[in-house]
Every structure is written in structure tokens, then in C-alpha cells.
Length: 141
Image (cartoon, rainbow, N blue to C red; front, side):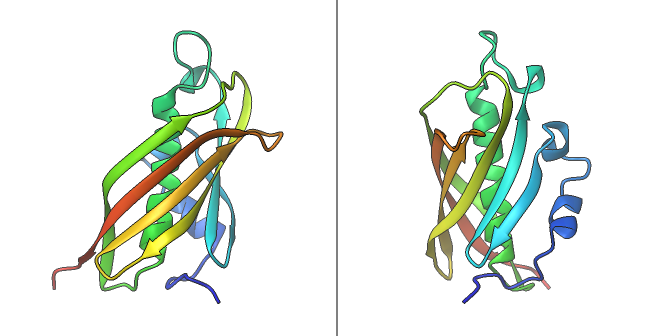
């Protein structure tokens, strides 16, 4: 059974990135299934730190981006989700190529959600693991 409360379509997901940090970092939503969303990000000079490796902050931006859209697609249109906390453990350096972040829910509650995000390189090696907590808010009428 799917966790999504809104229609899932990659074109719709990617349209949400226009004029945002996700567009600036070339983050693209590339896959979804019944309980996860995956986004990709190219690793190049735009997201490098001074030593020529993927910047940890770029990894965290990717993790929060994919989990945030996932969280918001898990609530009906009377609610929205905002980030409360994120952490990350950087496991492996990446200098080039593409990384893929997959967000899966740990907890989908009425007032909070917790998401686990794994970022992997093109060879499926773990690059970063992150946990993201959101508050579920009611839209004001």
C-alpha cells in the first residue's frame, strides 16, 4: 500500500524545484515507489568543498530536499510539513559522478514524521546517511 496522499509524477515533483536551491544544485527527482522517493545530484565543482570532494552541506541539502518533498506528499492538502531537525554522517568521499538520495519513512505520525535518507554513489556505495524530522502543520484557512 502506498504512503502517498498526492498524485505522484516525476514532472510534478521536479516542477517544485524551479527557482530554488534544488534547481541551483541540479537536484532532480528520478524515482519513486510505494514508500520512497529518490533524487539525484551531479558531483562537480558546484558542490565541491576546497579539497575537491562533495561538500557535506550539499549532501545535507540533497537529503533534506528529497525527504522534505516526500514528507509533504504523505499528507493531505489540508496540511504541510516543515523541517525540525536533520543530521548526517558522511561515510565516503565522492569527487565526480552522480549521487542518489533515497528517503524512506521511519515514522509517519499526525504531528511529526521521521525520515531516513541514504545517499549512494553510482556504484551503490553508501556516501552519507541522514535522519530528518519534520513537523506536520495544518494550513490556515
